Image (cartoon, rainbow, N blue to C red; front, side):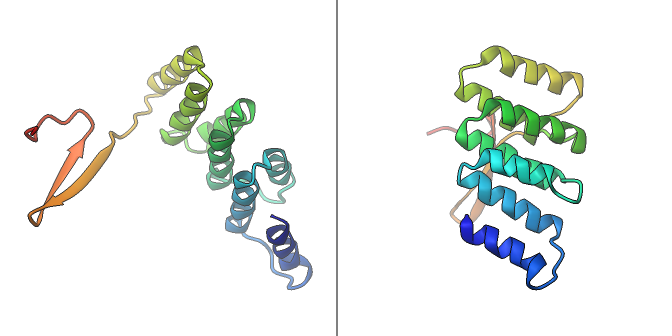
Length: 146
């Protein structure tokens, strides 16, 4: 984290390179992976450009890993506005609530999805058997069971 922080600030100070949104997202991801969630939020709040969905998504993912409910809720709210049709922030927030056993909150998230007509794509897996690819969707009954 210290090295990443030095490199990021040296971009501006030493090389006069203006960081792009991707650079900011990388820093938030770096802080988040290390568990520095408060520093990640502070970094976001001090960004000279408006954070995009990638930046908030990095923070939300880190909140899932580190079980930070309140900050996860805050990051998800930003994503609900930035990417209103995406199911991903709803799913991540639900997973945060599930890890904490907050079943009533999960139901509220599901209701928000229904009310906003946000649909999650079903999970899908592919396997190759005898040079033929088979796709399996959640709840798929089209393949015989052995």
